[in-house]
Image (cartoon, rainbow, N blue to C red):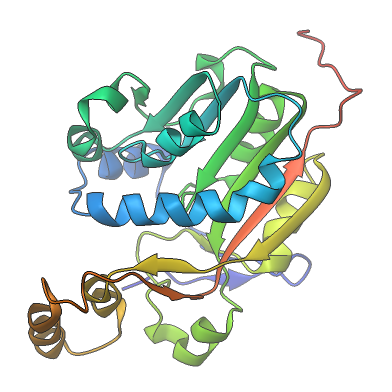
Length: 265
């Protein structure tokens, strides 16, 4: 199932022009089930590898914010990279319940709201696989801009609807989903940051590495066949290996210019 989408010919974004209200979206994610704790660890490793070249460009590694943190798996990788102050925003109470005890202190339960945080207080703000789900991604990246210190960076990960695999699968691609309010391309992901004031905007595709049983869950196969195949590999030697595949995920980034200070500062 999916919402009907329209295409912006200026920025290449496909989006729902009559989306649900922000309140209904927030309520649905608050009550959502969560069964991806193991995959979250694998995803966090992939994000950390892809992010490392950009992370090396940051002058400070003091405070980091992750919007849509899940079990805070990626925050753990940032702690290992030297960040001292970690905050993750997560609306799903099930995801928070699945987080290890030592990570729960990092997690703020709720939807992302700019006013909760101090302006110009973060060196890094991350938003992975969340921009597709919000009603207004432009408002989110604009808020993140104001929360960044001058010289700080925003990093997003989105599906690339123009990636090879997604083009081959068409409407059978897993990214065509009722939960997605918009689908980005590499062009529209970069454009989102450029039009909201970010400098030195860039991006790159990268590989995710998951167990075979998880990849099978994503394949557009009949449910019965999918269950049989998943059961046959789960727990086997094949399922203990992580298989790297470029499925069209795209990491975009941009920096708040160093010489700029807000009125609040």
